[in-house]
Structures are given as C-alpha cells and as structure tokens.
Amino acid sequence: MARQHDSPQPRLEGGALSAALSETIVRLLADTTGRGPTKARTTIDRDLIVVVLQNSLTPGERYLADSDRAEQVLDMRRAYQDAMGADCIAAIEDLTGRTVQAFMSANHIEPDLAAEVFILKPDATTTQAATSAGD
Image (cartoon, rainbow, N blue to C red):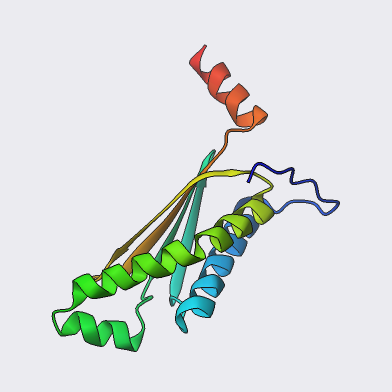
C-alpha cells in the first residue's frame, strides 16, 4: 500500500479532516452492517488516528448480546472489521495523503463502543519535528 498520494485538491486539515474521517468510517460501517453508529469522534495526533464510535450495534446484535451471546457478537464484529479493513485503510490514506502502517479495531458491548485505530507511516515533517523536540 505504499503509494503516492499526490492530488491537485488541497488536503483537509484539523477539524474538517477529523469530521471527514468520522463520516467515512461511519458510512463504511453502515454499508457493511446495515446500520452505522450514532456518534463518532476522531482524534489525530501526528502518526496516530483513533476513531471512537458509539451505539454501533444493530438491533439483532443487541438482542444477541442481551441473550448472553456477547462473545458471538464480538466475533461477528471482528469478521466485519477484517473484511472491511482494506476499505478503511484506503479511505484513511485518501483523506490524509499518508500511508497506513497498521490498522487495529476493537469493540465493547456495554457500553456500546468501538475504536478504529490507524498508525500512519511517519512522514518527513513528523519525523523532523520529533527529532527537533528531542534535541
């Protein structure tokens, strides 16, 4: 996935980028599971992007979890996330212009929370800033 992300359009930054990342992950989940989370918040810190999602379980998953089948719901969520991993990575790379080095995902039943974590390959500016800060 080490590709160049040159685009004639200016890149989103700050809050606009965070909002676009949240909206994209919510849309991908909705397309995959039939229902998206009701809340999403994205935090960006240099080479780290974390998207925290709330209330993402479908009614069927909620029913299973309430019927002592939470482990099966978590297994199914892992399968969804494995299947949609490439799409999530491509979306993050397209929006940030950076290469995703690693993608991790986790879910929690009660409260209904999920986290999508992306580690970006360091770029020259973040590597330089980190080196300068250490001097």
